[in-house]
Length: 249
Image (tube, rainbow, N blue to C red; front, top):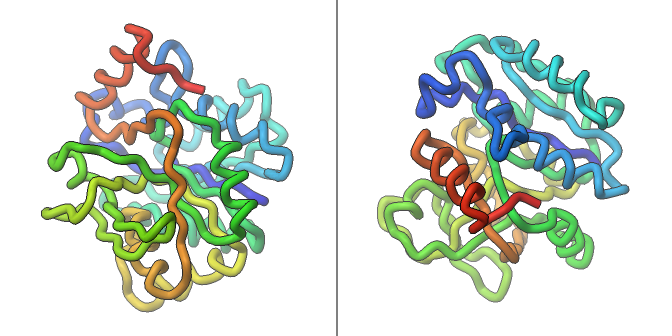
């Protein structure tokens, strides 16, 4: 199994904090967000390589981070060569770029590099391993305004039967986070998805397309998950950690 960490965005909603530093390297409790993710990934023996896909603007920052990392041999930085928010490939475009650049033909755990969570990714992996179907992480959120920022799913048991990316009128309270495990056969479908002219940006769009073609299962996380997209969200997570109300894994 491989893993792709999506870290090529420009985080314009977090300006000015992210003008000179990528979002994934912002600290929470003195530790970069991406380190919480990598610590979990390296604990899974089946993951042989972690690809961190980045942009040209912050490539050096990530190379410097990799050299400081205790897990440098397992991490490879992949530069998508974009230089601005106007030229970015989008999350799904970056997944496709990484697949092609590194000839990925294995089951793959894909995760957004700005995700902060307090559950074990190994539990999600075990859920996938027990089912052998494409899987996503979900959490119930009882706040309609917050739900509008996520892909929102309807479930039949743990099977997704409806999903809309960033709906104006959410049909359920099940938010899908940008943490996925795709079978190797599904990874090959990313190119088909893009060739059909579908949106290359928010990764939930791919799931929105995929569940209509084959089973996609939802893993309900046993903890908290935060998509750090705004300065207010970043500050909120830092304060919750400071107060001891949540902690990273």
